[in-house]
Image (tube, rainbow, N blue to C red; front, side, top):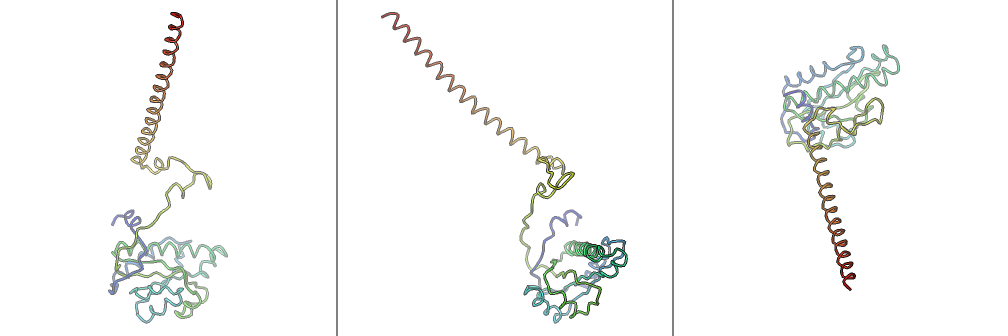
Length: 236
């Protein structure tokens, strides 16, 4: 699959078939995750793979009762070694960089899963301390997210997206452009806009001509009546 097609068509999947994810595909996902950029190339992301049904069945109650999670054949617990990053970058590394590093790895996993024909979902709502305790996550390492993975049982619903115009600013926050299609090189859309504007101008012009003609005709008729009346007076 082409990279941009993969990005555009990926969707969160919350319904899975009863089919295990093959080990070679799991390895592919982990390799994709390991290629993600990280602060100082510290690669402080860590992954716990859950494939046992008993382990996965424990998750819904500690993930805010998201019961669909129990259907997933694979769950990846994504952890960040905050202590490792803090040693190099201080408080900002602990509170921000490690989160960014894990987020980049998660996105790689989601895209790689889609490329393999798998469905996946990024989960951020869970009881962190319970998961850390249950799966023996050491102090200094924080659970950042869970990812469910499996073969989709149905096609995900279409995604509602904000327009590029509402997301992008120029030079400073809040600065927008009306010609975003030109910036994005979507010239076909810009041509459609130009045609629509031309149609609107033509319609306004046509209305103006009709109105002018109507007004002119009325004026001519009025003057003609005045001349007839004047001629009649002269005869009288």
